[in-house]
Image (cartoon, rainbow, N blue to C red; front, top):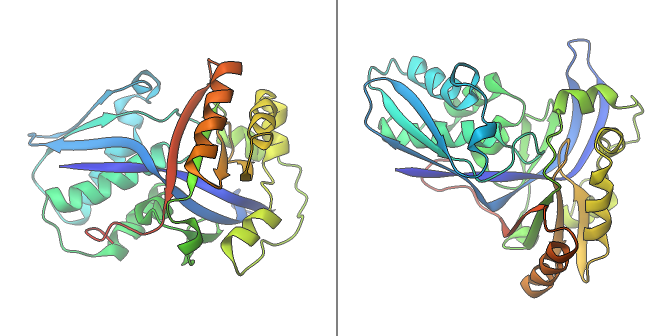
Length: 285
């Protein structure tokens, strides 16, 4: 069995305040790409995880890996005695603002729910996800959502306008610490995220973490400039805490032309030409 750990996109990300517990209260529009890491499972006496793929060397050690933490939490929740041999094909850069470990953990929960033939209890998966990290619950659903609070107070939004929208992800191959970016946020509340039409709200919105991320990794500015200059780009913005930026395009031809131009000028940058997905996996949620 296999699951895709769909790349997470923050179409807009407003940071409203820092709570006494240290977490930041945010308002965000989540969307998800059709592409992502691949997680597969086979029989195993214990829980195990092996990595492969372009970015496997960047994975945290086994004892600190959120994928195994997710698997163990699900195992304990349902008193499972079976093991599982997990293999992660790491196709997305780490510490990149596009879900990364959160998406991988979410994929593990969806995959093992099927592998261990567990009851279809979406709320149980979401509860485990919230215990693992702020983005994991959204990544479990992997459909257009509005997130508030820590980002795990979720509400479905109409994703019709986003379905199969051509998407280009670009990263200058720089890892950026989420904690460092949030710590560098200037603390200014610049106002709420608009409701209503998702595209209009995203275009009118912003990413409040962008200035802090730019101070840490100025190359993000080069990526944003390259995407913003592309023909027929509907929205160009940094996702999450960076360093990955995205462009939403009018057509796949526009997206591919932008990708080709960026590859010529910046051959070392990582790119992924894909589309936005609009609906959750029917088999899981």
